[in-house]
Length: 123
Image (cartoon, rainbow, N blue to C red; front, side, top):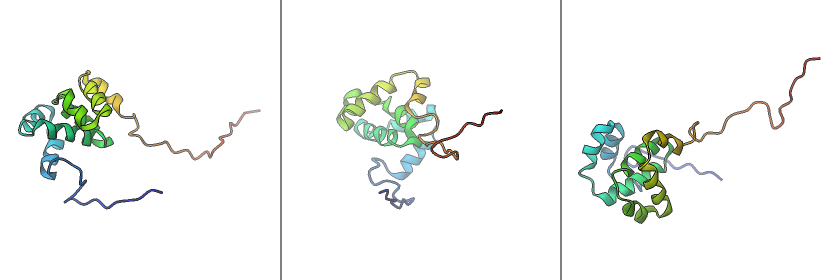
């Protein structure tokens, strides 16, 4: 059974390692400004943030960018195998990062044809 949990602006997710203001600044920052804003965040917090963001489809790219500023050991400490895979992905060409997410954002296609689509043949 699926459960819906309310999300508010004050607490978008209780497990986010940085305050909401910091998260929104990072989300809106360009690639060049991002590294400057991350400078004041300790590496252990950056690693937790990278894993947190990578786990959400709409922030996955930002998570990989932040993981690129972390050492592999930090990411492994936070998330084990996933941290190791994220470290490897963050060291690849940024064009490969798009492969980290399904092309349709993880959504299943909608078919109105039903379980068995019939093919019409012309006589």
